Length: 196
Image (cartoon, rainbow, N blue to C red):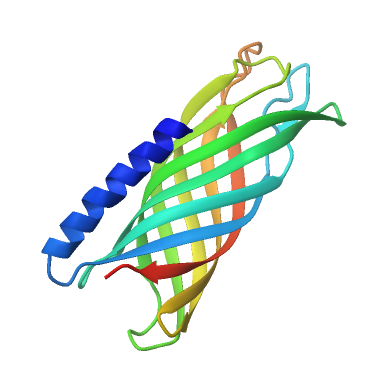
């Protein structure tokens, strides 16, 4: 996690420098908090195991581009989430990290205070397990990211609610059932801050 945060800070510094030098390009930061809810079991072969829902935090750096969809570097993190095996909960501390690059497509007229939007992108989803559910302790998988949100302009701030789905495939080490489709849903609220 420390390496991810250092990389995010360096990327933000580079993005700030680039944005300052290109006319018409603005940079917004989007911190948020919400809940994570998996919609699929990790496995159903032998042991039926799934992650439980939990608290999620996120941060994005979003470039507003003239006449083009916005571009977003996106991070979602679930720092602590338990598992359920055969309908029995355990309190192990697993985590989930998703890093994506997204296109953000506004659905609102330019001067409207209510700003609905869609987003689509892709990246990497990383699970870290601290449990005996029959898989390696870490796994990274490619993920598709789709979502929708709506913002409300309040002076310099844009209050935002967003729902998104990280879609990937996951394979347990101890099964021969192949990769299983995973849908990890995030419901987040936060605010966008214009840096310049």
